[in-house]
Length: 295
Image (cartoon, rainbow, N blue to C red; front, side):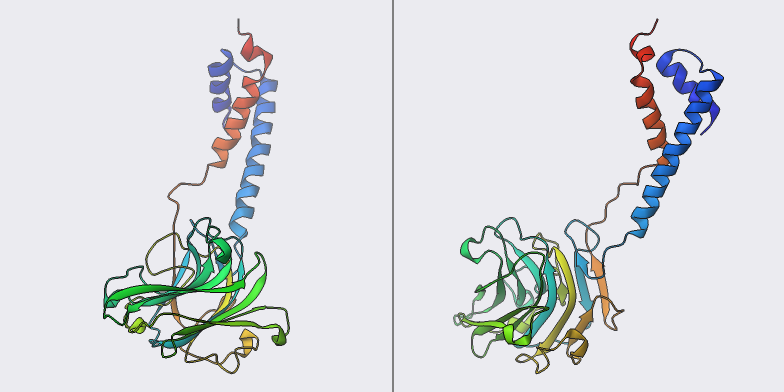
C-alpha cells in the first residue's frame, strides 16, 4: 500500500490530510489485513476436494468416458458412493448413465442408474433405473424401475444394478460399504418389455447425463464398474479386487480410461486482497466520530 493512497482516502472521507502517526497506523492495519487475506486465499487454493467428489454448479459435475465398448442390453453397473443430498424435486441423483435425455430416436435409447429425489413420495432416496427403448408396438418409450432399497445420506454404500432386457427386470443390490457381504440387500423388479436400449449414442457418464441437466449427483463416487451380463463373481469383494470389465474407475488413482470432467465454471474473478484490505480501512474510517461530525 502506498502512502499516497492513504492520503487520498483521508481527504475523500475526512476532508483533510492524515497525520504522520495516522499514516503509520493505517499502513500497519492495511498490511495486517492484506496478510490475512493472502493467507486465506492460499489455504483455499490448497484445499482441494477429495478425489471423486461430484457437486452441482461446480467444474466437477459429471465425468464423461470416451471409447468404452457397448454393454448391450444385459449389463451390470456398480459403484461405491456416498450421497450428500437428495434431488430437491422429483429428479434423480444420477450415479451413472448411458443416456442423452431424449426419448424419440434410436440415438436417445439408453439408461440411467440413480437415487430418487425428495419429492418422489415413498420412493424418495431409493435406487432407481430408467430406460429408454422400443416397446412391443415399435414405438419409443421410457420406463422407470423403482426399488424399495432406500439410502441414508452421508453413508458409504456399495450399490449395484443388473439390468436384464431378456428377463425384463432389474436386480438392485445395496450394502453399507463397511458391512460384511452377508448384509447385502437385494430386490428384483420387473418392467414392461423394451428393446434396443443399447443402441443409443451417449457415452458412459458418472454423476449425470451426457447433456447438461439438473439430475446431478451430489457427493462422492469412489469406484465404479460397468460389465456385461449379471453381477460379476467378484462383485461382493472390495473394489481393489475387482477384475477389469468394460470400464473400471477408481477416484484415487489415475485411470487408464480416457475421461473428462464437465460442469459449470464460474467466470467471476477472485477478489483482490489489496482491495479487500483497503475496503476494511474505509469501513474503519466511516465508523469514526470525525466522519459523522465533519466541520
